[in-house]
Image (cartoon, rainbow, N blue to C red):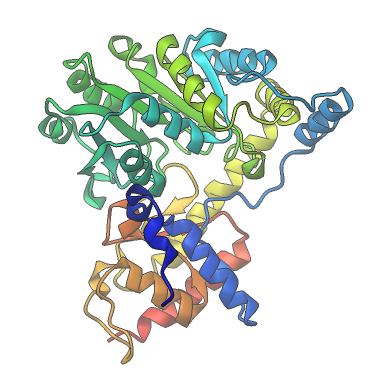
Length: 402
């Protein structure tokens, strides 16, 4: 009798859910391979190419011999560039010993969780959240606690909600601003309100994911790490993927307390060691040079946001907020729950995402994976024509639900 070898996998691996965004992207690819014209709006990936001056820096680094192992924490050239970037853009003051470079911001977050969390430690995740926060926390032994900001709050959590969720087991808070999946951006006033709550607890650490920092339509990015009372409790996470269109380069970094950065390096040293040498040199150039290409990308995202808001706004039953950053829109589709096309009844956001993929050939992601099952996430990191076509297809598909 055949034995299912999957039973031998670790229990924590079996408990881990597959990334919903990657799963939907795979379904879209399979549908496309069957000859269907699928518009992919599921992945959080810029459709722009990496700017030429960054690619040229990588080529030069290769020619200069940057092909060897690097220090686990990252090349000094890049760590110094990150120190300057944090000071220039965020008013965050670090030394190179307080900087750690990783193979993507996702690894940075995993390093932090593995370095800090013990079994039973609770981690408050401001919700809606990026899909991997929940999985990483659980894998590291922590217990995720969702504190939810609803659409009427612009998907942002209040100090009162945060205060009510903290207890003696709470060790960490994770959030992103600009937020994936909602596009919401916390203002400095809002962060100061949260900081007043956090300041009461010396043993509570904040992981501030600022990977979408440069795709911010408010005119000013606010970093919670600049708030004086929290400077020893905040770990700021960033990376090259979104603002510089460098997703495939896999380069992330953190700034934080030196003792914790050293702990993250210890974790990373046993898993992957340092990130790619020539990529780090290119990243140092990217952070230190002209930001016009990044600013042009952000202008395009803003135009696309307005475009998709306009067209989704014409679809009955969708509730939409006004995202102020990133390149996502997160409409509430709960008015369609219980409706059917005669074959499929929409009971949740995953049903809706599946229905839109199969009926409209548009790939989106169910909001349940982000902690908000009333919504779906739509990426607008694609061309205007595709966005307009996608909205038209979605409108026609939803009109068939009765």
